Amino acid sequence: MSNRARDEAKDRIVRASISLFSEKGFDGTRVNEIAKEAEVNKALIYYYFKNKEDILDYLIENLFTELTGLSLQFIGDSVVKMIKNDELDIKSDRFHFSDEEALGKFLEQADTYIERLIDYAIERRQVLRILMLESLKKRKHQKGLFRFMEMTYNSDVNPLYKTIKEADSDYNITDSTSLVKFFFGLVPIINFAAYYDDWLKADIEIDEMKLRSTFMGIYRFMMKGFVSDTDIMINGKLNGCIDLA
Image (cartoon, rainbow, N blue to C red; front, side):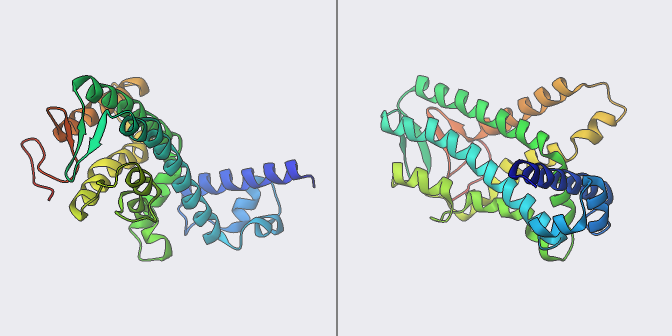
């Protein structure tokens, strides 16, 4: 079998696993069913993966890597570049922008980034749905969904934090801010993607474009709570809301 054929076979195995895990559940799917769906023999599955659990590990790691890549691109193109251009100065509790124009520029770039995250989550909604289901079970992959908490950690093992910290040493993340980023930043997008198909099938007159734009509008409105004058709060009091310190 050529390298190209092997790659295509592995891709079929992964796609078949996603489809079956999503439809029947991880526990309810057997390896021979994956083999049948992917049109390969079981031996080839074990060539790429040690077992069924290894396939799910692969899906989690691949999803995490791709989401981290999207975030790093935004940080490099926006946050780091604006710091270098003296348009952004990170304080202990906020992103302080040089003027309203700089803040507007950042918010526009952040909008594009969030839209890309939403589109990516919708594209990978089956995998996210699998992770949500597994997170409710007391098993190995219970913490799979919480792997994304690593993207909010105040630690050098978090490439997002490390990249910003290297650009401005004042950058810091408190435990409460990490909680907000995960449950009010990432989780709404994950939930939206996981229930995306169910919402469209519900007896509600809304198409995909309207559903996506409505969610984006609500998400954008929620994020405005972090904006104050030419600042974006990261470790402090939100506009009319709670104290994150």
